[in-house]
Length: 258
Length: 274
Ligand SMILES: [Fe+2]
Image (cartoon, rainbow over the protein chains, first blue to last red):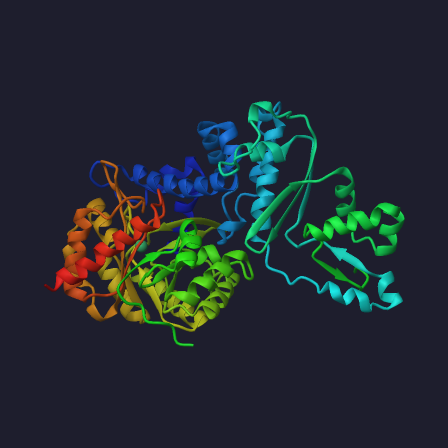
């Protein structure tokens, strides 16, 4: 079918520069623009849309590496991994790995860590709403149910352990935080554990203590109440009450995990 | 539920303005919601859209149907769009007379079609299928374009008219797009307007372009140009004071500035018949 061939040829030119001349054969030259220049306008426009998308996904990385480096890297990524989904919110996850493989960033992998955080923020923001459990029901549980009791973090929760101070770096690049740390004073080598989750229309991002981190990881691994008691012993009531207060625990189940 | 009528000159809803609109509830005749940004079921984005639709008449406008593509429709896209429409009760759903996907790739950019009899047949069948899937008549928009294919045998206005008549859909005339394409392909934009059947047109779009010297680029990043206001006046005289919407997607101004641009369109409505 001629239409299929034409579309195949044009979309190839959008994501493969060396296909521009081939696609241009199907296009009229008009006025001062050659047919190849006309196809080029579409290549620029499609790349521009996706570049804007990557910039809005990775705004701190964009600031860290600068317009030129970000643009060049993004254009390469777009050509290597054109979108395959009509949902633009799905696009750009692979950019983190693309940065991680970039030769110029091998000595600055902390930037890649910040990219991971930024993608997690996007994913948390797009996670679907869920209904919180009614914790008052905990009181009426039978003994058998109590044995199988397991708690859950919000569906949007991301636990990120990083060997760099991703949270501080991220904060330092937020305009709206008046007490943000000064980027120059941040110790990039400081490991940070970060929890991200969405509560209604707010995204929460916070660093965790080692104990809180271990506790939330155990929750995420679906340890039962009995197993939690074993692992955290007399620390458990305190860890549990902090997690509840902060909204880190969102629901519970009394059926064993599949 | 019957949707509220879409009357007068509205604006495209942009994330930057949502909180302000929900807090202040300024008088806005209607809002066009970009469906592609709200397609995750049960997401916070949908919560916002639902709240907006509780306070304002809305339409849904998308870029992702890929009506002119040759690969099968994306089932999930249509299911999500239908589910969104079932929640928001838009007065209508619009998308573009173009294609955005081929070869398993999605351009997220509006790519033009070759204007041939064969393409008309293909697109008509696709629009009919889309209308069946969404259980409503679609409103189809003309895109701005920067190239013409060797095989195109018809003018754009002949093509779009034939498609609308045969698919029995409505048209969203983007007056800026007509102006941009007319400049880029050296045709008379008034001839375009005069050839479109009056009863097919449901809505107008207005937006700003950027002059690149060799061509005009439809960037939606500037105020509507004087020449497009002039063409809009002719459109009003031919098609009547149809609902009009200001699109602004880059260098997004304050809500006040955007509403002032919509107000200019309202004034044009009044003066077109004075
Ligand atoms: Fe438009």
